[in-house]
Length: 261
Image (cartoon, rainbow, N blue to C red; front, side):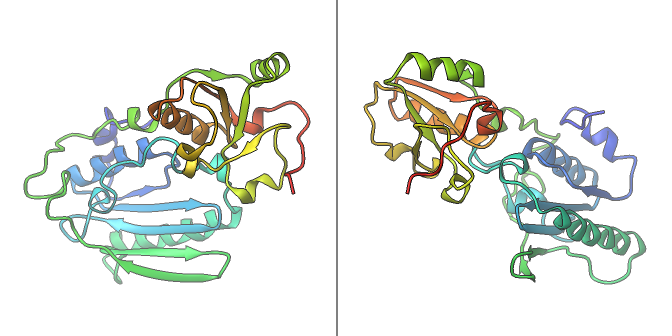
């Protein structure tokens, strides 16, 4: 069964504590809303690449998830685990902390990570904590809260617009020498190879793309999330013919070229 805003309260209500390892924002917010609305402690963990975070969201003892993260980031602005990757051992490190926090909450021993955000940098081998406080105007747990049922944030986390499959893009590149192909990944990702002929331009600066606004532009990233968001931003900036590669470079069946020197 997939947890959604529609069934989250019913599922969460049957348990004393919720341990959350969701890998997408729509599910995270559905869980967070349901926990705050039912008063269940929310043992949350998040990982990406070499970094991890853990906290216990539990109003009124401390902030809820929306106190610190009021809304999902714009679709595609944050690389997914599939795009950026995750160090496998980090899952065990963060998961073990979550398990310990759940035991502390259930048994009433120790000091749970309520009101604190635990941050792990696996590359540096460091653990640090940052204090986090309740937001007095939080829409979920504040005195004048407006969220009375879990919000369906899936629409905010999805991208729309025309897309090419890898096979369609190969045909486009073969038939139209004027197409502008843009790799919107980060520089560190380019070393693994690029689709031949691509310009290298990170999505964070996509509005600065120095091509004619009437040019035929195709974006790609690692798995399709950032390129879809970048395409939306270019359209909003006045570009008239923008598409992106569904599935990203991971779906590309052809040869890759070396990063230009």
